[in-house]
Length: 68
Image (cartoon, rainbow, N blue to C red; front, side, top):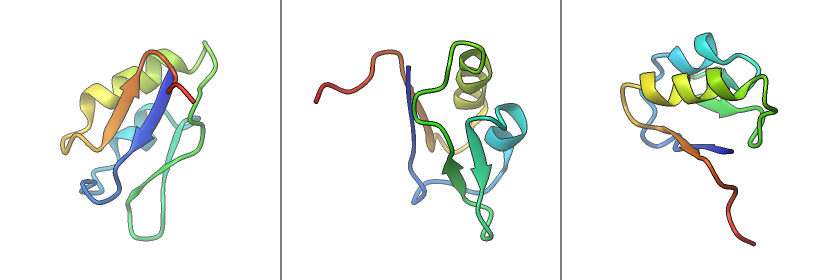
């Protein structure tokens, strides 16, 4: 799994940080900050849920990491 977030799209709802605090946080402006781009297996369900709950679509979850 690979996690990204588009801060230009983020509306600062905070659902990501509340749902998956090991993967996401918010900066001083309330915008999403990705703490862990490749969450471990224990954090993956919460990261997926955060992606589903994001009202702006800023949080993106890819099941496969990007190809280098």
